Image (tube, rainbow, N blue to C red):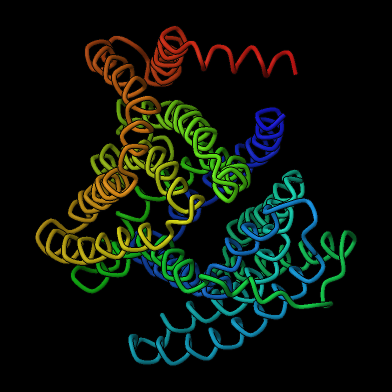
Length: 468
């Protein structure tokens, strides 16, 4: 029953995310081509700051909400939703004030500040409202609604940006598009949620239990991907930030494909962890890692083997400097595909403190690497730094998961890694004799077929899905 529900929810999220992310990625590429490296660097900085500000309306509440909502079947969801809503409003007001102070202190250029404000303030409100609905529907495992909320916001963003490109809107107007699209997505989220449950009734103090650890952990999850962008702007220039951001945008979009698997497994892992059913928890964590690393490998292969061709097709010849960066940062997708199952394994067993500690140490490593490597190698240094960041997380999560970490790594990742290396080796030998588009599909198929041939559990899961 659990696996059937997980696959059903993953299918909803996968379908919506694949279409949405492809549409969003194409739009982002068109925006980069339209703006050029310098203005795209400013836009990327504003996106990074808006993402962090948007997270502060959550502060880990989504995790404590899902934890409490999945403990048993008798939980009072009305009081949980009411408490969640009230806390989001408080956090949103505080974040809005802090954002103004921080931006005024850090940035002197009035143009840059306007871009940030036009994007960040609507994002704060929109993220708060979207998060309330998304957390509820994830907790009750009705993820077709979660997918719908994300899709509506993404489609509005992409469609409006395309109109902006057609009518040649300036950067200030394009930046506001991102923020107000998030706002519209938030209104839609509240509309869907209000049809299911009361929004303002009740209060549940358990939402605050261990919230600090979830806050710190979630904040680190949000900050770590933004550190290279923010630090590169300080040690290089907006052109280098633009190059790095263009390369990094592709894997950050691609990860959403295996990432939907993590979202589908999360409530089930929480239930097993809360009930101390650790054998079933381990079994689920291994299966999650297998599926995610299989999908992650499929995402990596085309851009690792044919980065020059993809950059030329997507961005144009004048963005050729991005190709070496893409071939490096695409590996992040694979590393995140194993890091998230390991991290969620800690969180859902009640070890959020350990996850937070690992991420805090990694943040220190990230700041040092991004500053030093960015200063010496510029955008290439940023690309190298993100690999160091993910490897640091991998080592930490395995160590703190102890025996279970080793088992998840061994049974959920290593077989897929070996098969991926074989497919990449064949690709390096044969890629010059095959058209890049054909080769991208061909070597992904080789990897997928070899992985399924060598893993009986994945084959049985595929047959199970067909029967269901």
